[in-house]
Image (cartoon, rainbow, N blue to C red; front, side, top):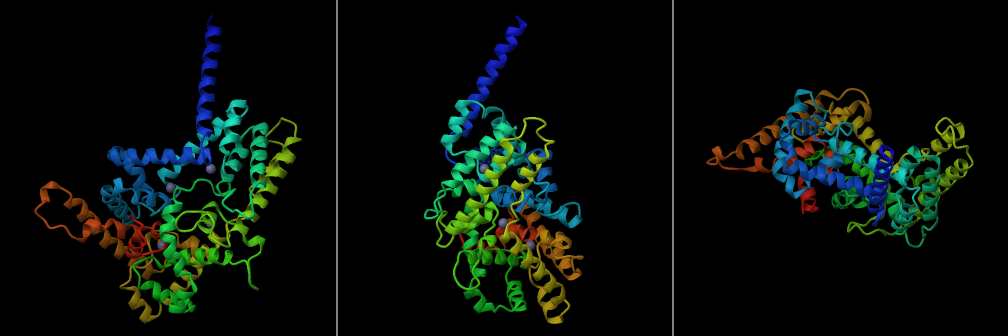
Amino acid sequence: MVLADRSARREINATHARADAVRLVTGQGCPACRYRDDAVGHWVSAFVNESHTEPDVIGGVIRAGGGCARHLRRLATDDSAAWLMGNVLDPVARGVLSGRVVAGSARACPLCRQEQVATGRLLALLDRMLGSSEVLAAYREGGGLCLAHTVELVDLARPRVAVLVAELAVERLAATDPDDPSRGFDLLTGVDQDADRRARLGAAAERLASTEAEQLTGTDPLGVLQADLDVPACPLCRARARGEWRYLAWLRRPEGPARPVEEDAVLCSAHHHDLVTSHDGVPGVPGSGWVTTVTARRHEGLLAGFARSTATLPRDPWRSSRRQRSALARLHLAPGCRACRAGRTAVARTGALLCLAVDDASIAKRYATCQGVCARCAADWATTVGGGTPPTVADRMRAVLGLVGFDLAELNRKTSWTVRYEPKGVEMGSWRPALAVLDGQVLGGLGVREAVEQGFWQ
Ligand SMILES: [Zn+2]
Ligand SMILES: [Zn+2]
Ligand SMILES: [Zn+2]
Ligand SMILES: [Zn+2]
């Protein structure tokens, strides 16, 4: 009797899991990306409406220095969260100044953690349920996982599911049409909810890297740095944006003697998205189609090779098989994003120049009145530029952050009913400049005014 009950319960659970899996894989776009974004949406609305009062939750955001740039940008552009930004950024600024907190820590970001948990849950469900013909049919119909999530599932799934998922991705990659880059594009880049926010900043950031901008400031690195110091934005984040957008603009020009070759067309999902979408978010910027085609062919080859070598493996032992491990390693061998690399190089070179420039009396005088390097870039100096943060740079960052921190405290104080007799001023909007002072990557290297002009806060 007990056994019969158990087996009936197992059957009911399996039916529910199957129905869940069918529901989750049905619809347009990668199901793991959608599930992940839903989890982020739920977290943000719970945070805005309720959980920001829970010490653990707000404490997690503060300990992460406001969270990674992508997620702080998400929070800072959520209309419902604007009233809360002072409460979040005031303790973050105080934490950074006291040395207890590092600004913009992606490792500690609660929303990145939320994403990892949600993605892991969805992929584990697919690993269990893709053997069901009903789930598989819905998976095929919906188009399946994006490339990044395909590789993640292949990494953790049982051999049969891993091969199946890889083969389905190969089928779709093979169908990428060189004349229509929008086809296959979703598979390569996944659903990117941050893309629209980046695109709003990107139009201005792209102009920084344009030849017209070079004509204005010259290509002399010191001239560019001095021009950047006149803008209330982090010069290193600005250099990163310029380096990345310059690389993307160059990739779109597949002609001329210094044209890019296939090995140059290696981009992370976010940069591939930025390359291919125009600023209204529609895929198909001229000159970007060949990058999509080259990327599709490269991954098609890697995944097909993986599926071939794995399909012939004995079932056990799965993880210990040397061939299996080398097949997985090849999948991860896709070299790092070249646009990210161009950005890192620009930061390293601009940082090295800044180290030298602040020893010059006239530039040091100028630096003493500019906004200067953001708290995140100052904290990352040893890994991005090398060596210790120059005292002039660290001192200026602390001075600017101290002042913006004072405004944030005023903002919070003046929201109280008891001081309603006091006039309200610029401090009420101080959370926006605070974003740029804490982590310049939130605004893509732009100043607040530039971001507002771009319609970043619509
Ligand atoms: Zn995905
Ligand atoms: Zn994050
Ligand atoms: Zn910065
Ligand atoms: Zn990249």
